[in-house]
Amino acid sequence: MTDNPYQDDRGNKDATITNTKGMSDEFPIRESGDAYPAPGGPFLTGEAMTGGYGKGPDILHECTVSVNKGEIAVIVGPNGAGKSTAMKAVFGMLDVRSGSVRLNGEDITALSPQDRVVKGMGFVPQNANIFTSMTVEENLEMGAFIRRDDFSDTMAQVYDLFPILKEKRHQAAGELSGGQRQQVAVGRALMTQPSVLMLDEPTAGVSPIVMDELFDRIIEVARSGIPIMMVEQNARQALEIADKGYVLVQGRNAFTGTGKELLNDPEVRKSFLGG
Image (tube, rainbow, N blue to C red; front, side, top):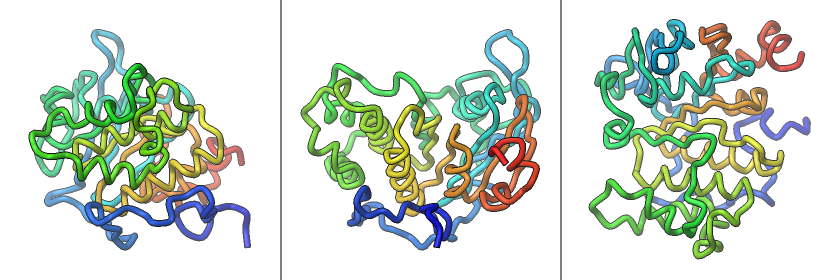
């Protein structure tokens, strides 16, 4: 046996820090390994993206990232590699000067981030991702701003996924710990009922135990069928739960493969995972 909680199967095995009941029926648990592509290609893909911010130089150079339904796709690499830039390009937050972004077979390259949310994209930025003066529940309600139906069931699902948020639902979000704030941010994105969820360094600044718990919740969301694309600085741990991994260097694809393939690649291990 190993002390690595992700070695044999995705997910943390320490039941003391997980939600043992899992997600409820609105997001039913599906068997792992059932990822499948949208007609004509991956469910979400940024294909051969080249671009940068404003009139500045290109940061991405023919960069390609994609994810299928039910998959977790992880983007890793050294600092300054263009990981968050690639995520922002897929979400429409910078100009893609060449290449394209497609969602469920539809070219959305020209759409604004707001229009992409309406199309089904949920995005959680690394910083400034909650309304600190609002309560936890008010933050979740803000996440449902595009909906015109009764979203109480979805809020109940978020509380099932993150039980601590229900306990603190009337507390100002700015008073929460870093890990709890991240749960609020992810929960708010889920309130839109997204068809794909994008996370920019969801475990930044949290303790290892909280990181494990957040990864558990991310796995649960993916098992419900929602594809997840995330940038993560904790490369080794992220690749342990990844169906697909991308290593970027200077805005270009350096290595691509399953999480296990990248973890077992000697060059990836030496250059990016500390040996």
